[in-house]
Structure formats: structure tokens, C-alpha cells
Image (cartoon, rainbow, N blue to C red; front, side, top):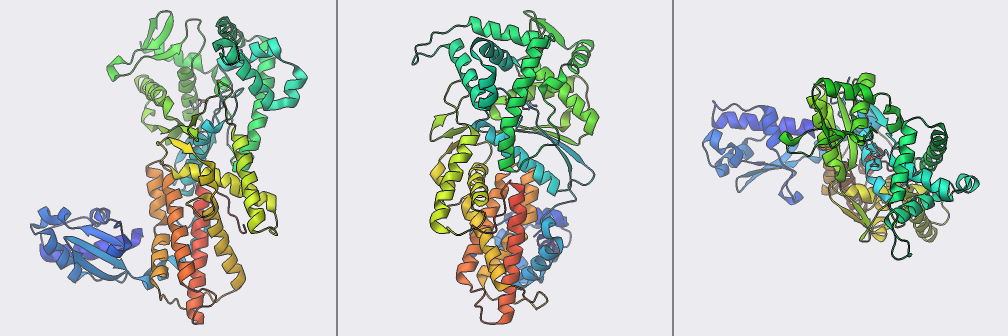
Length: 579
Ligand code: ARG
């Protein structure tokens, strides 16, 4: 589409010259004025001519008419002037002659804007759950948005390093150690794994804050005990450190299964605990630069001038804090990877934290401060219920996936009981449904997760698009070999419309990277699936009027399969050949 926009813009530029020979506009400026009309009937592309009125000193109506009359380029079937808009209809045969050979030649690279990332490195910090706490639905966002951003950047030619900056350090371990020492049982925890840990974690939080329903009164001294246990860890107490290593191992193991289901791997698991040693250097630099202030015993960086509350660097007892570790980790990553961009995906609740320590990095004089990017996302609730780990009301991601898989398996049993690899497919579709539903949303918007909506096979869902992918596979396997050298013949609007959608892929990928917004890809997948299904229902493929039309439709089906497959890869959706 980019090329198409370019050649249309060239033709428009000539028209503009004809109106006013002094007017000079860059082709790229004209290209960026081209819009996709809201309704296909109004054209495939449109130029709002009021944007040229001032330069050309003509009315938009006159300009549109002149440009429509002068439009001549092989990609345009016709151009119309309507109310000051130049409406452009693309030529199906031209689109086919571009899209079909290109999807064939590029295959799994079709749509990749490789010029973007060549020679550049991106570090992505995502998922990064706090260990010792349950991996719950609130972590879904950072995990799938982060992975999707990694896939998008990789597709665009960047060298990517995905880091799971696990929260393996902090007071939550103090709490868990108190709970374990009070109520724990080694064997029970060893065998119970994450469930046993969650139980202890919930119990200690209830004990600290009290729980009226269960008749537990609050005991804040336990919070002090937890802090003391954590401080002992920071001071190198071997008993606590041994417990800590064991708890970390158990938590990591539990999370592995989630990552396997999602098909996500990381390049590094360097977590918060790795930065105890790197921190003092940064604290010293802050001190040397005169940035540290003592406030009520704690060390802070005053950010009032920048309209933010102070950034806490060291607690009163000298123990480290979240921002301090982030600064040390960012420095380490810059040394290790020399990134061109360093991306952090977390809930919007942490936006202030990132704004603060990014500012501190800038004040410290690190010239890479402007390469740090925070990508926030909204909250998730399930059917209205807010999710919190501190109470018993947690929805584990594992349980959510299990429920989705079970429901999909039941639907499949009804629709297609004889399919091979039943379990694997049910997992791909069940987990895919959750991911797709999640990534359909603009990331910053809060989501209320409704399972029935996510799993429906005919709504705008994961199962629906995976089913469409399987449909392209089934058409191609039924047809067997077909003549790929035969000349293409476009005979229907539905073919043109689908080809036009396929040709937009690269632009979509660019937009998604630009906005750090995987939902742009998700919505595009729905456009492709919709266009393919309309084509499939209205145009007979295997029973087409003649061989040439049939070959063309098979080629279009194959191009669709390539585009859907490539786009699925960008949002962690598995390619299901049969459902
Ligand atoms: N562990 C943190 C949490 O669960 C998220 C870490 C995000 N990454 C970072 N570099 N701060 O809230």
C-alpha cells in the first residue's frame, strides 16, 4: 500500500503542478494526506482537498475535480470528486499483480518494515512478576503486550532482548518468610508449589490487615517483622537467603507453565535481586551530583521543579527501593546491550514511578535518558470484580487459561469431534481466545473480561480468526497443487477488497510499532478475516467458472493465509491448521 500511495501521490503532484506551476509539495507530504474513507463505497483512498486550498488558492471542489480528471496511474481504477474530496478506487488487477507475487516472495517476512530496525537494538522489560505472589490476571497485560511489542520489533528488523525482570527482591519475601516460619511446612510447600505459597501469602496479608469476615483482627506488628526479615536478607543473613532462593525457585517453576502455554520465552531473567551490588555506584553518583537530599532520614531526589513528588532512593534503614533498583538495572542494560530503545511495559498505576526515575536518570547526566520508554496499560477486572493479590480474591492466570481451554474443548467436541491433536488445539484456541480478547482493546483502556464473549466462535474473537486461518488451510489442502504461473483474473469486488486489505499490512505494522499498540494488529486481523470470509461466501473458489478464476482465488487464499499467519505471530496467537 505504501508504494500504491506513493504512485497515487505522484499522479496527484502532477495534477497540482497543472493547477499552479509554482506549487511544490513533497510526494511524502501528499501521501500522508491520503486517508482511508470510513465506508468502502466512498472509495479506497481519499484526499481531503481543503488541505490544498490555501497553497493552490482554489476551492476544494475545483481542486478535487481537476485532480480527478487528471488522475492517471495503473493502480487506480477510477477517481471521483465529491464535495471537495478526491475519492480513489483502486484497481483489483493491479492490486493482485502486486500482492500475490510479493506474499509469495517474502513469505513469513511479508509486511515487515525491515528498514525501521536494521542495526538497532531494543531492550524490552515485560511480564516481570513479583515472585512469591501469585501470577494473576493483572499480569496478563504486561506479558502479552510486552511479548507482542517484542515480536513487532523483531519483525521490523530490530535486535531484541526480552527481559523478565522478576521481582525477586522486596518486602513480599519478608512477609512470606514470616508466614513460613510461623505456619509453614517444608514438605507441604514443596509439594503444593505455588498454591501453598499463595495460601501463605494470603494468610499473612489477612493477619496484617485483619479480615472482618473471617474474624481476624489486624496485627500491624507482623508488618514490622516482615520488614525486619527482609532487611536481614539485604544484610546477607544466610538462613533467610537460603529460604529466599528456595521460594524463588518454586515461584519461577510455577510461572514456566504459563509462559509455555503462551509460547513466550525470555532472553534474560535478570531480576531485581541482581542489582544489590550495582546500586551503591548509582547512589554515589547521585550524591556526587548533589542530587540527594535527606528527608526524615530517607534519601530522596527532589522533583518538585518537575511537578512530581520526590523519588525515594534509600529508606531510613538504608534498605533499597524500587526506583533505585530500576536506575541500576537501566544502567547495566545500557552497558550490556547499548540499546537504541529500552521499553518497560507495566500497568498505568506505575506511570509516576517511571516518570520519576526517568527524570532522575536525566538529572544524573546519562545521555541515554531519552531512550527509555514506558508503555502503560489499563486495569483488568473480571465481570466487574477487581482483582487483588493481597486478599484471597485472586484469579490466577493458570485458572483462567484452564477454564478457557475446558470450554473450547467442549465446543470442539460438539463441532468437530474427530479432529487430531484435540488437546493441543484446544489449548491453542483457549489461550488464544484470552490473548485476542485482551489485545483487542486499546491498551490504555480498562477491560472487563467476559469469558463468554472471548470464547465465541462467531464474534470478533480469537476462535473466529483462528477458524478463518484454518479455513484458508482447508481450502488449499482440498485444492492440492494449482497453477501459480497462470495469469491472474479479478472478477469481483470482494476479491479487490480483500487484496486491498492484505496490501495494508506493512503500514499496520508500522503504526503498531509507532504507537506501541498491539491492538492495531488485532483489529487488522479482524479486517482480514472479515474480508476473507465475505470473499469465501460470495465467490466460489473450488467451483469457480473457469481455471483462471479458480487459480486466482486460490492464490488470494494463499496470500491471506500468509498475512494472517504473520499477523498471528505478532500477537502470540498460534496458527491452527484445523479446528
Ligand atoms: N515487578 C513489578 C511488579 O510486578 C514490575 C516490574 C516492571 N519493570 C520494572 N523495570 N520496574 O509490579
